[in-house]
Length: 440
Image 1 (tube, rainbow, N blue to C red):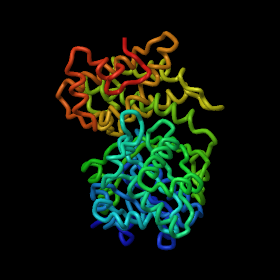
Image 2 (image 1 turned 30 degrees about the vertical axis):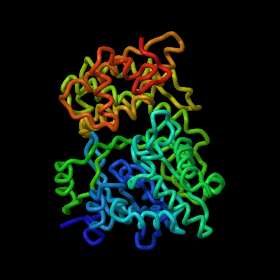
Image 3 (image 1 turned 135 degrees about the vertical axis):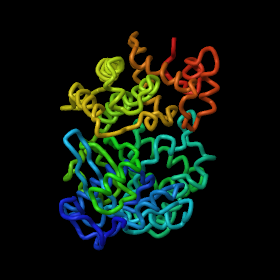
């Protein structure tokens, strides 16, 4: 028996504190994977539970129908299992109303974004989903493709403009430095190329706030689903597993109405940059280092790698001595305490966060996670032994063949590391990831 509105578990399990049937959809979310369901959708569920109305979520998968097959038969309902050494708690989330698959019904996606009730389009499409060329500009050929977010948003903005509807807030929730400004620039490049008449309207009517998102959400396994089924008494194909910690920092710059996310734990600020930089360079930088160094030592999960006495000091030094000094902290932002908390979170044995999951798409992650820190120290005549060790581990990972290289630049990376000077082939003047940092 599947989870549904008719089979919601007993009162011991948390459930939506509002009438789902009376909520219109105010958000379209593109990239409705496990992270969104454990993070932004939970905040939105909380906001509606606190009295906000009409912020239901229409989820969009650009290619795969897997999430639609999980959630649509359940009326959008799914379970969040929060796990720690102290135990597990379950909660059913009702914010998601339905899931569309863009590859199967493109017009339905455009119509959902263009609907008068929609005010926010949010994104968790990973770094590679923004379709940037090597110089950071929009890869226009890719952006015109069938699975491009720009294609759907652009068509929907044109429909809204034609109907006399207001613009939208486009809310990037991905690990990109200055993600709001990046999304705005790329969207403008697409419109200038394909729908030039919309550029001025877009600039005047739409907003792209910066955000910082933080919660560890491993991929759900069949074992996870079986355990949750035993606790719920019904089968939940869309269940997600996460930690107790959650943070969402949002630039308060919206085109129109928004949920009162700040009333349920989100932080609305004028400048996201210090939080975003700390997360990218400390948490994400440490995660990538753990992935490549840990896999090289045959560990499988984050908690195993951080428990290794040969690895933990490298990660601590990366966060405290290499990344933290590069961050211009906001008032009250305690980077030492942040590092302490991260080490505790990484060590959580109840979360089976696979290192190979973190190792995906290294070419899209490493510039903002490691290279910016390396360049900052190089300008000051200093080095970063921990990050340099992580770079060496990444090169060994690319060369090793023990694991598949799941990366949009996989062929170029393999060619770069096959030669005698892999470091320069990756990071030199004409390297795959050429940057301000220059390897010795």
